[in-house]
Amino acid sequence: MPDATAEHSDERIRAAERVVIGQPTSDGAGVKLTRLIGTAALPDLDPFLMLDEFRSDDPKAYIAGFPDHPHRGFETVTYVLAGRLRHRDNKGNSGLLEAGSVQWMTAGRGIVHSEMPEQEQGLMAGFQLWINLPARDKMTAPAYQDIAPDKLPVVAAEGGVTVKVIAGAFAEARGPVAPRATEPLFLDVAIPASGAFTAAVEEGLNAFAYLREGSAEIGPEGAARALRRGQLAVLGAGDHFAARAGAEGARLLLLAGRPLREPVAKYGPFVMNSQAELYEAVADFQAGRF
Image (cartoon, rainbow, N blue to C red):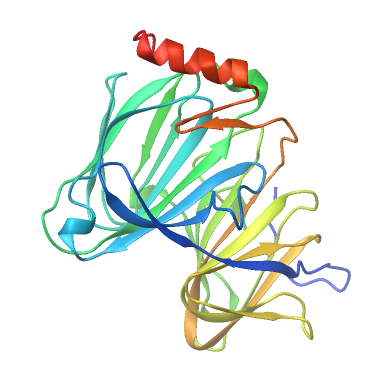
């Protein structure tokens, strides 16, 4: 896994090969959000199936939340930046997601859960990511983990950069969750005005960067691509990532994962490898076997 920050003369900086903008949509009981992965422009980026950003200070945009709904065949990662969400599921788990916390849930063979706001006003902001599971693990037992903000390591890197490590490794820090099959890297990076950031990203992993605040140039010197808030860059081949922030600084998410290269069959909250498995998932849910 990536764990180095130093620049090397032989490093290959990943270029921003494609830049996409998310699509406004709604989910749950009408929660308004922006879908960044899982759209016509970017249906998926193996092993990442979907990435949603939710951000609003209008209670009407989020108050109805995400009532009970099922999942099978993948993992969900919820990263809350502002606000409070309560998780409950049919396995007996319950947890409060506050600002800076992460929920990592493995749906496996089936789980029914809800994520409901525990606030009636104020800003609600964060992300939900769906990560595929390999065929051998799709029917594994469900699992759930709440990760409090103080359990997420934060690295003070060169030049005033700070890096929160949610998954994978950076410098000497390692994130608290480490799925074996996809080996995800998930960093939340804050770069000061006109500052620079580099990180090793293992060759062979699919990777992207999402600019959630400010502006930055992404990619190798001389061929960098400018990004503004709300743009996602699909990164090309290489073994390092490089970014330089604009005059207002930048806050970005850097993610990478090992592609599974398996067939993907999707139907709403179910992600399997074939249509037959999807039919089985629907039948099992309807029969109460989750």
